[in-house]
Structures are given as structure tokens and as C-alpha cells.
Image (cartoon, rainbow, N blue to C red):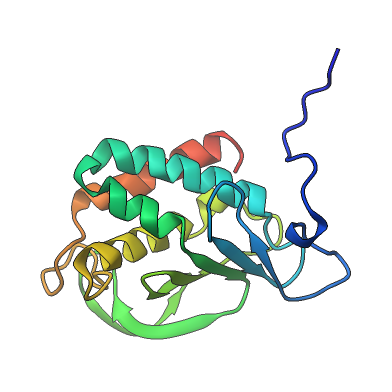
Length: 178
């Protein structure tokens, strides 16, 4: 009887996290040119990120079938940095209200690069990861911005349906312990 193992087998060493190094850039399995940047191997593992992205894409296809191509292109070309640094910015809350010097748990810097705050052992479902993916996809669709005011009226792109998608993805991930 063959033992089933939940992590990838025969992964090249250059793709695995090296516990003797600090800052590392790791390929996300199943996503062509996508990477995570971590401070150490305990920050988050690339396999959980890959599963989270796969579930996110499934939900996106169901909710926004007309923008599936943009979502796939985005997810196959992202770099997401995960760390526990505290950051603050002027920006918007989910309702579109402007907030000065707000503590943030994630930032979409470009249509293909984001930062997500996480702590050692934290599950992906408890981070802003799915939220930042939505920003990056909208940025790729709009080709102007990632709709920084979310459900507000200043920027176009984000709807209540996007917020519901994030909730559904995170519920699925939490159920799986991811």
C-alpha cells in the first residue's frame, strides 16, 4: 500500500525553503511565474499559498466568468511578500471612507505585486491575501488602478460581489485549515 502524502514530492532544492537562510523568494506550485517572498520558512509555506490561489480561482470563475482570463493571468504572474511588519498608510476602508494613517494588513503595490501581513503559523484564511488578489485582478482588468476605495464611489471595479467572494474563499480555506 502506497502512503499518500499531502506535500509535493521530488521538488527541486532551489524551489524549497532553506531553513538556513533568511529572506527567500519561493516559486508557488502550479502557478507559472508566481512567487512568495518570506523572511524565513516559518512565515508561510508555498504549498498553502498554492491551494489558496487554486480555491480563489475556482470561486472567481464561478462569480466572474467574464473576467476569468484576467484572473488567471494575474494569478500566474504575481509576487506576494509575507511578513509580520507593521505598516500604515492613508487610504480607504471597505465602504470607501478615507482614513489617514490607518494600520494595514495588506497592500497591492502593482497589478502583480502585493504585501500581506502574517505571523508564524497563521492560516492564509486569516490574512488579507484574498483581498489583495482582488485588488491586483481589478488592476489588471481596469489597467488604471486596483480600486483602492473598495465599495466606495470614487474608483470603479470593486463591488459587493467581490467582498462576498473574499468571504467565501476565506471560509473554504479556514474549513480546510489553510
